[in-house]
Length: 268
Length: 186
Image (cartoon, rainbow over all chains, first blue to last red; front, side, top):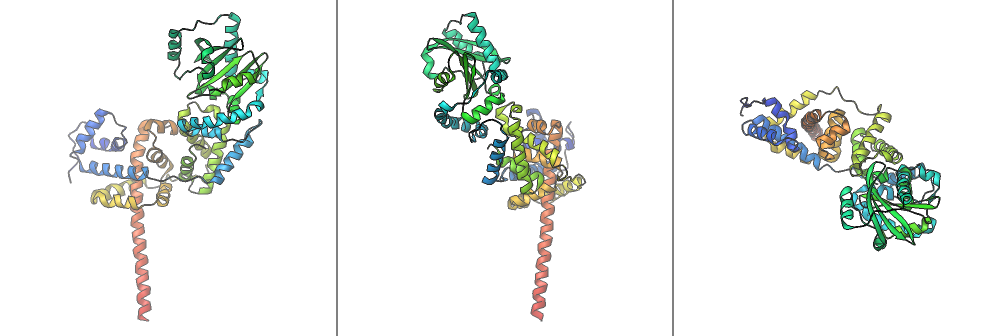
């Protein structure tokens, strides 16, 4: 057996303690170079490397416990019981978190169910809606734009700028694409957001696209999405509808009844 | 329900009992459901759930949780180091391969929490050192050293377990032989 090489600047003991991190790919390239050089001549460290690799390999193959259907059902029931608003039994809220791709694929199914719920949509009152920070912020931005009476001119550079101003994808509502009259970047709750204005039934309606993080931070919106697939509320003469997208969320606002806005949003 | 199997496995490693682990997972999901707003990055759901479970464990299961701080850690590390130096790596790898999940869980449960947890987070859960440091609130250098030592500890436990097992089997075989010889001689 070779004796530990003590001719390196870094002592043998310290190098040995780095072997676990070496196996895990957590060392810098310079640390790797020093350790590999040491490993060539140090038998105890070679043994340590074998030990670390063997344990790692075995644990990586360690099988998971499987949760029983009973446990899953129990958790579902308890979570539903803890919600204090009218509830349509659904597991979509959890499924959304299961994996980004899988869960958003499940949204397509949920969207179909929303059509059936169209006439039964959960619409909230003005006071409750104004207590939702994101919706209140959208409403303020919308009112400022409408009060000013002017919308930015729609042109390709503005559209390109808009897409670069946010870190998530921004696409117009497909069925309203031809009615797009303006786009601009703005801030909702202090975070970058995109605004897309459409002309619908001789009214201007505005779709605010916000980050998924901001969108799901709103408890009441989140609950409504879980229960109904969409959030819908009246704001006096105006209405608002919100729905999740891929890596973002949209809030559509306009001076028309919620069901009209809801219908417009359903092509997403 | 996302990550329930992973959480249940982690809970089982912490608590040993399947029933207690299920209760803990149930409490964790309920807490998560009520505190959904605290999820600040949806791509990192599991670490968020795991942190909730850790808090639950600390709050409600402290008295049940294992505390094995008095274990002769250094002795066990030495068992592993000396055994692997004394023989080829092959027998140790074979021993490891033959070790089933139940036994591995049992040995995990014998390790001190601070070592068992980081090792599971790294090798079973696949977290980076930085993520483990965030989850456990310990410096990254400590994570690195604990993982390295935890692997040696586990190796020591595996070898000790096998040794004990061998002796028990040999003793059982000897007893059987004696019984057999006794029966024959009658």
